[in-house]
Image (tube, rainbow, N blue to C red; front, side):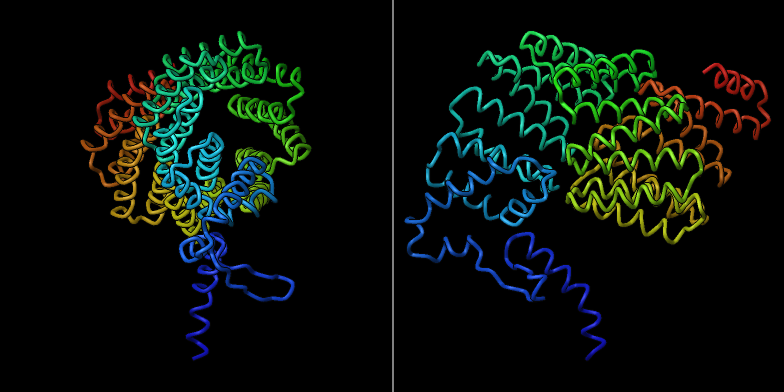
Amino acid sequence: MLEDIQRYIPQFRQALTVLKSVALVEIDQQLQRIHVLSPIKHFILESTSYFRFQKPTTEFLVYLLSKYQDKTSVQAHQVITTEFYNISYILNDSYDGGQLELDIIQATINWTNWAIYLGRPLDKLITRAIENADMTDLKADCYSALGQMCMHKNSVHNAEIAFQNALEHHRQAHNDIGQANDLLYLGELYMHRNQLEEAEKSFQDALELHKQAQDVPGQANDLRNLGKLYMRRDQLEEAEKSFQNALELHKQAQYVLGQANDLQDLGKLYMHRDQLEEAEKSFQDALELHKQTQHVIGQANDLWNLGKLYMHRDQLEEAEKSFQDALELHKQAQFVSGQANDLQDLGELYMRRGQLEEAGKSFQNALELHKHTQDVLGQANDLRNLGGLFMCRDQLEEAEKSFQHALELHKQAQYVLGQANDLWNLGGLHMRRDQLEEAEKSFQDALELHKKAQYVLGQANDLQNLGGLYMRRDQLEEAEKSFQDALEL
């Protein structure tokens, strides 16, 4: 009997966590007691006095959503996450009852933003808000929230439709800032699709509108996104200039959080240039500013970046500590995607050390979290990492299955660079099996996609591998040409 109880304890803990997240139980840490709560939903369904309490209950929950919009606040999490599904029921009931005041629509937008943040991408409520929003400006904001929800679910086509609808409605309302923000979201979407020309045009158009509206933080964000685009193109001078200009504007606006994010981006640029001292200083400065603003997720991301830097320097102890600290902060902020990314990198660190069991556990945990948040791109990257682990173990069938599954998910997410890297990995696997025709096709397909993504380093690696393949076949002229082409890149 005792053994049965011991086996059940982990499941019981998980069940308690779920019940607490939806406000069905309260855990009193001081008294070590568990209180079963009567959920609002059942109270509403069963109470004969519901209509007497409906209006004040709704007003109170709408007030909570308005007050607690800072998702890095511990107090906000304590309030919103426990009431999350109860709030959704109340809002749904408001639409059913024809209670369509503006504050209900705005509350739905705020709730949707929380849903995205918590990795619970539910779009029913925001769709109802769109159907019931009469004001053009408010309907535009609803479409914008829907677009962000679709992007979170990697439904890129639907996201584009939503952002275009938001843009059109903001134009009708003559809302320049709204239009600029829609163009910013569209630019990020085009970046995701690797449509870099379209992305650049969107960011530039957003910048012009933010200038017209004299919105300094908006201009800074546009410049930051342009910097990321130039990084993707390997135009590092232009990228640095954009990030520095964004930093100056954020200083001008006295927006400390924006400055911290700009320093993060500059740190990544210096990492790319192998200027590791400058990169470390930027990440440390960003960390100080994120601490100053009590921005937990920002601090976690800075630690994550420092972990990547220490990995690059082969300082594995420091890297592990940074990733573990980042993981703790992402847990504190209940940011599931961040936790998954930390676990990904811890897995790569354990791979570097040859700790394959720990690596496999980290990759599997990351995969579970990415599934929980319906993050297709994250799942694809986890599967790619698992494929690499299976390659190390010489489990080639499992490796091929993982790489193929990753490729399918990267296609689903329309992520060209990810597809190219999956094909590169498959090429390496075929080389291990001495399947040279299949390897050549994989490397050639990877090369085409790396060209499409304008990723120079990827192209060079593909050409290097093709050169090695031609050497294996004794095709020396083709091998020499591939190596020369790689060298020129």
